[in-house]
Image: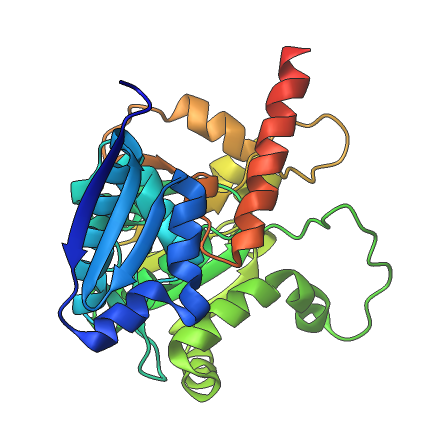
Length: 325
């Protein structure tokens, strides 16, 4: 009975939707066939799935929900399809429709910024509801970009008077050596990812004007000492590279009317020697404190090139094997 084949049919009335669903050279459908080990073929406006009952049901639900996303005007790609298959396989097919539903912000070029995974949605919702949020996860999960998007929206809505972006000046396993120029030029390489994120959101000219008005500040973490930051949206990036003292110093900079987002990847700690990460300690110390949320993103939330997701997953698997030795 387990090997008994079953068949389901899905009708796709709209030609454009049909083309979007199948992808170039049917690459989307080929991916679903490979992932679920089922057969899929089309005749006219009808798509037929055949294979084991559970796999066909998963494929049918996935296609249905992908059609809903396409009908909203959103695009689908291999990463999104794999994510939809994972959700359907876990019995969460109804949640596939939540992907890409809400517009968080609009970039200066008019591009809509949306959550592409449920993990990202949870992260954004936590930022909306809490004063302090820790976003923990691997590269490519949108931790910094989404936090910057939320900060820009808060500034435009006059919920805050300024945005403060900061990160510790710790080299990622490399020695940069002597850097020429003044102090700002010396620290700029460390802050470049923050510049890139806010430039994409606001545009270089608007960003520069806000810098001049001191409505946006991008500075290394050391610049935060001794300050109280009122009515500000404050983002600490690469927080895994803070010491315990730096993290405590940063967290106590918060003034009235402010919001903090701390992002980091606890698998990528670049602190010298055996010093404990301030982020790791903060996650232990502050767990359960009211108005502080902690959101963990995984390889499933990676939204860069699909190969990045595979790389992150492989490293997670390798790390798990090492811990079990």
